[in-house]
Length: 205
Image 1 (cartoon, one colour):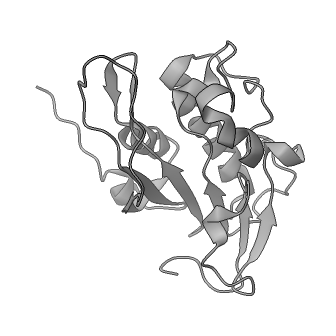
Image 2 (cartoon, one colour; image 1 turned 30 degrees about the horizontal axis):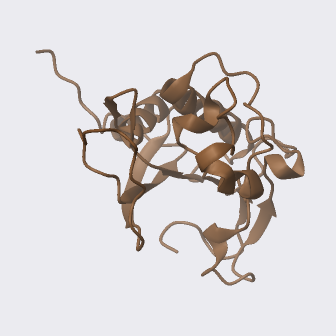
Image 3 (cartoon, helix red, strand yellow; image 1 turned 135 degrees about the vertical axis):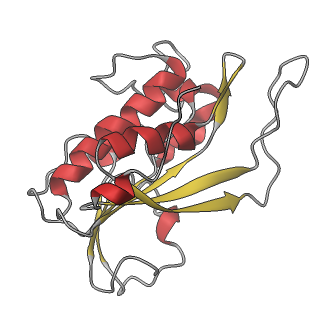
């Protein structure tokens, strides 16, 4: 409601069961629904260039879904994703593994989103969650922001979404990091001025 005008064309490229839209009136936007279950990869969309006002990207974002073994893509503890989004296979075209493959998928999807989005004042709306991978804290939302700035996407806003149920508990013998009870809702904008793209400064130390 803050950013996307009524009547806009929105491509939800990871539609799944439509959970993203449960509280949005159907008449508000024209939603183009697709996901891997429908045979459409978010990195290769069937839409013309410069034709969409906003893209929604909410893929399975835990590294266990992208391993090159029997635990990938909705198997095992992630079987709920099998019904909602995944086709049960590791996505092709990924060169990284584990958590790095998650970030790689987000970057590849953003490049395709930039192709179909209108070049000025359109939005890429992204949902993600931080995770601990191989004992290392990975701040996924920071990684996405930094990579998307390199793609000239301005991180215009950030919302923190807290879950109402308890977070999953790993089987590790000793807890080393805080459990993740929240996810992020990021709003990126195309056509930003150079000054806005300098919104993140990294200083020499």
